[in-house]
Image (cartoon, rainbow over all chains, first blue to last red; front, side, top):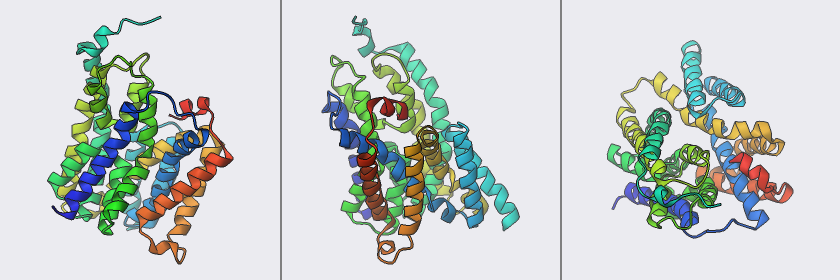
Length: 101
Length: 248
């Protein structure tokens, strides 16, 4: 089996276990305050680390990525949902690179 | 007081229809983001069929993106497993929350199927409903939300190079936009989370440039930073139950 298929199976398997184990095993709330707090902060740190500086490096022009970051933060701050924020970021990159490139 | 619950385990046509309806906007959002994910997957040498199956089974934007990026760097299988675990750790919390809303009398196999697609958005609409979880509703949301995610990924892989560079460049920020939409609203409510997001940005930038750390793969850096920063925050600012509910 190829490297790619094995990676996909590992990813799918681990993802399923993460989701299904709490549903099947944990019938009561987690009591440990540290674990609760740690798990609570994990998504924010992971997503933040993955977003910056990657968003600036993903576009053809780093300036366009920086503008997308600013617009995305502003849109999310004002309460826009996942889809509107994602579309705003894409749109400003398209517009910014029209002028920058 | 116990609600009448016998009916909620059998097929509930009304709840199923509501699930189908609520899954449509989620699916539309997924489709656009999945195309962007597919472009990343293409760089990792993933075929359209592989991308379709990967996305169908995994349904995790951040997790899949992290894994595809790591595959480009030929990460080891252990690294792939750990990166998946770290990037998707939030689903552990969501599943914990969902488990508290499941009726102990609900047939066990429902848990096995619902566990397939606990995503930010499906979790969001499911937990927003009052009372105990109705499996038929969950299945409705999955049916309209998940296929666009899988099809979008395959399409992104197929179109990758055919798309003009400007379009690819624009679509490549869609995922990051989605991440921002998850991390920014809680930052507005909590100074701790806001500070944590800023610290993560700063350290992520620094880690990519520091002599020793920058030689590690991006995925490994993500794991290390996540564990250090989350543990530090958990020690310095323990979270109380009421905050957790608000944050979810």
